[in-house]
Length: 113
Length: 242
Length: 114
Image 1 (cartoon, rainbow over the protein chains, first blue to last red):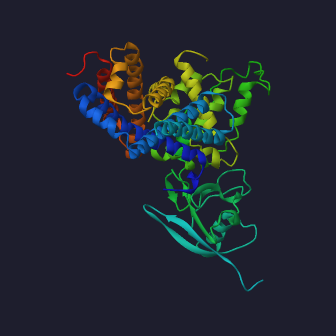
Image 2: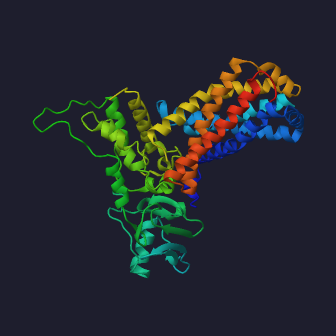
């Protein structure tokens, strides 16, 4: 594909939004299935929850929360762009969105350690 | 220094009836040379069968738009020294449009979508009515004026990834014009226009990647116009606004 | 590819999910303090209408939002069109609604295992 016309911050914001969306969409059915085990097989769910104490899993959770925060703040940025009076400060907003996302997922990670 | 002339390595897209390919030419480098100068030199000195378009050659008409090293630009306003990678330049026809021959594309789909977006003025009065009293500081007029300088060069259309992936997508230029007409208080066709930009190829497909904003030589903002259309169509669901 | 209706459904479900997501994140950050077990979760959520409504509406909103989002991606990246595209969207919606509803039920239903 043609690269040069895509080398700007807002294209990355779009791509990040799309990739995080796909990641979350793949994660959710698994998440829902695991939770429903509370009904059919609580012991398996308990075992899995203990498994989440592992550092590796905590890192994966950090990644998930990052995806969620990125997707949400990116989406809110997009809706602000669309529905609020337009101001040409989009690069600042995009950067702020990612920064907030980092902050949220980092605090999650730190709390969980 | 006459003896040591520098040359550019220019790859130009050649196509006639079917698949195309890049051909390389050695073009003498000159001061203040533009990409259009390069293309003209090739056609006049190296290969007279090269087809391309230009008209004003001073950055007013938009006819010379092509892909230069992967980005859509007016070639008459693109200095070689600004875009050349070392001494290599790649020139191709505008993306997202069918190629007629070499560097000349068929602009029909671009203009067909202009009409399909209802980006056409619908009069509400006749010559016998008094002139519409629109002041320059009217907010709607300001919004329309910000979008109105489009000269239909097709660069935004070539830059847009949504155009590339959705054949029905009306594209930034057509939607930008539609928005300028939504803000024209003399226009009588607003309902039909909002409907036209709400179909499968309408404004709601824009992802706000803003390739159009980045590349428009007239510094227009089709993304802002398309956002305006999104607001206008959303309001129309609830019966708010015109 | 989006029409006005799909676009509005996408945006509205996103708006609904913004506060729900922040709430969920806050709950999770609080809940994973000192580890988490099924018993700990269930003793707080079972029989609770509030949690049922909270996560129930979350599931409905995400099912709508993800189905439309994936529809756009399938269209743009894979060129899926027409009836197949619509069926795909409904399939994603059904899977997320079904699995999600089941999970909400599992966590808020009083009475334990089947």
